[in-house]
Image (tube, rainbow, N blue to C red):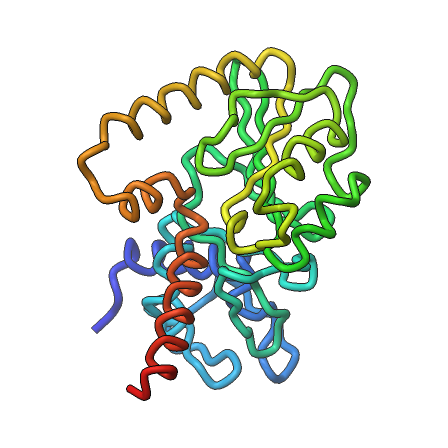
Length: 256
């Protein structure tokens, strides 16, 4: 029975998406290129059929656009993100929960989310949880200062409405926290550095105010649940991994 042409067209589109995302090797074992225009479900690529690649549940978010991939070689700190080995290709980092309209890139080894609108541009840069204090102490590792740019940070909404004229001033503010002084990395695991174009500053402050209002309205919910709700979606896997590790240590102490 022949496969309907519409199904084959959709299948080839999915193959093209996964190949572009680096989850399907560009060539098979014999060195022959994987041509999406001629792809068939039964074609073998490193011991798997293309149909197996397309139907793999782990690839659904990439196919739907809810996740993107980045080369693992460009990310210095991938803790909290899924690392996928690709036979015949390079390892990829899977970034899930991508905000709508965000452009995900790797900048100086860090994962960055960029937003552009009529009011200006906003760039949210993930701060590495490993060696976070050293990262903050070296202001040169923060985004390069652009003419007129402002900087802010997001840490559970605390003082996020403040903006600074340079990375050095922002770094001074963050290092004033007792948690940072005591080198408590886990306290800042959700920290984001935010780079704003001048027209976007007011929009950023309005967004923070709205976030804080929602937080106050949720006063009846447990503190733990409110903290989870204020964590950016793409960082939730890291939070869950940290809590799971904490529970494993707890059970080990109790001999369970």
